[in-house]
Image (tube, rainbow, N blue to C red; front, side):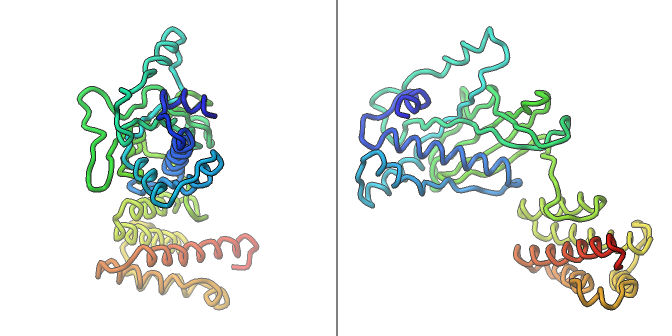
Length: 321
């Protein structure tokens, strides 16, 4: 493991804490990056967790105090995290050049807080529009976080700031590319860009025609526009009701009248069993007009509406409704 970490980091400080510190920190950064790219939406954040550091140091035979542990954790938060890929290009004529291009050590007198902490871009599972399924995407050699004249890394009140641009490629069809923009602040990673937009599946089971509206709602909330999420969620509710009543989506109707017609169509027993769309519509409308509400409110409204839709779908399947 020590030789492997030396190869990744290019050089290590001659101290008892290394390479256990670098290995633990690198794997934590890679794990956080994988979680961010795989499961998070735009502008969401992931905290890099160094909770495994005490056990790793103990396994390496290093006894440390609480003060020393805090010092090592702060060191990781300050050190530049240097992005590396396992991919060295597809052209065998240049692969060896790229393999050795970044080999080398920083000056020996470099302060520990300024020493690069190298990490690999993790492979991630993403939906591939060509393969029509979830495949493995790898970070390719064009990925980078800096070049000549780059303003990062830099220090701020929130810790060391860096910006990474990662190019991911599907390893099955080898044609679909995604460019992912990640911003680092101290121990936090922010997902700031994803181009082209990541293809998603709806978080809940809803009719196919409603899936894009639900994803728009969830994306809006994830990006910090809570009231846009309320709007999209109410739109999904209206589209479901109009579809159930055979009304063209372009027809303008008062929401109260629309919900009343829908409720009149449902059997009495079913209305009592399922969450009320009338209540959901009223609460969403009130939140939109007053611009009041919380993320927890949105989640509760989404759960109520989707539970209703799933219940109706299940009952129709068995011809109960």
